Length: 339
Image (tube, rainbow, N blue to C red; front, side, top):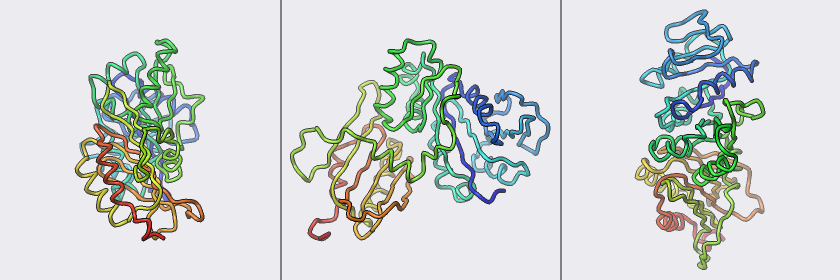
């Protein structure tokens, strides 16, 4: 298909939030891009200028230069059809159904060999309706998960609520997704927002996001062996951020064994993990990220003379911080052994 991996943007949001309007606005803002768009049902696309000028099985060519593909039961089959099609494109947009948890699709672009070979995950965008966001969070757990894993959140229909209420919504989102870029918009207007080619899943972006989790400490922990912990909670929902930072290095074998077990056991509750890790006997910083039960390591720059540390941020439901505290310390290399 192509010689280089093509960026993928995943768009989530509950029914009526404005996902299709956003799609149209993205197409209008980036006329230099030739998009492939995967939608749940072709009949619901509603893309402006979307008169079909040609088709190839399940893929439809539109007169605005885009192609559309209706989502099959097996996502991999849909992607394979795009890869093997004769149509050219340079950016893939995936719009999920309003009641979907995007984890499975995100994982496909991180772990499925043929998909990873052809595509690179750019970011996940969640569109929410300012008027109904709080009610949907209370009634629809999928909405909370969509917000929790999003790199960019568009609070749409912002003109319909008071500015103070918009600030309240932003604060609520940040309480369980500390690194989200949040924008209040009307009619999904993104004319002033950089929405594509942000590469939020790159090692550099994950590193920056992890370092941005501030407010560590202040919990009255006196034992130097304890990590610095800052919890961000909201009693109205179960999802939270938990951050841990400690001086020193992990033992790689211990960490690898532990993280596999931890993510398998907590696969229904942990949504995302980001980290910067020092491994004993590894000269470089290691950037770690996980979505649900899959995780990746990426080698960063050397530590050099910089003091080594491990910093990890967990996003998920009912995280047991005491248990994590104990687990992470068990993974640390003894100071005497390091010397």
